[in-house]
Image 1 (cartoon, rainbow, N blue to C red):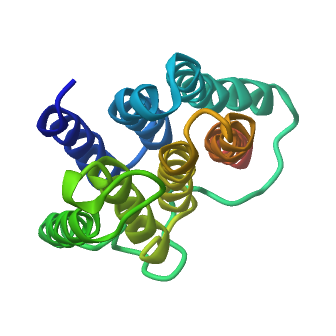
Image 2: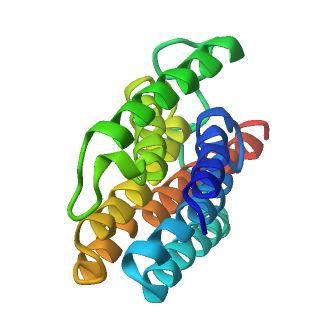
Length: 210
């Protein structure tokens, strides 16, 4: 697979990670980022690396709804609404959609610079092979840094887990696969936490109306 195609796939995945919001945001991010980074993982870490990345994406997609189902069966208890802004009641992550687009542009510029100027392991910067990891990593950092809800924070953590894990493989090949798998496991954990909180909060509303 040629580098421009890898970059295009990663760009689409990073755009999803920046723009997705509301319910199922973490689920969608896990699937999109796993699909966006699995080709790069396969090239630099081998077939098992791609399996780990895709498996983490599937685990993230399942962990949220599963945790929500379990939480919904428990007794209602007041908790944090993961979709409720903590600092700014009437604004989501990045504020208006135009600001999200601006954040994506910043991530694109930063990732392009890194991919052509920073060598990692045996990968020369002139190859531009760092772009998929750098772009999704930057998108994750932006979501975490500007997060105003638990859902926003969970999306950012999931994207960062995927990016750091694949970056680890890019730097060391298949050798650090167990360590990379440990890092990427943070993505389904974040999805499960967000799904749990969302279900617990929803279960309180019917009880409050009685």
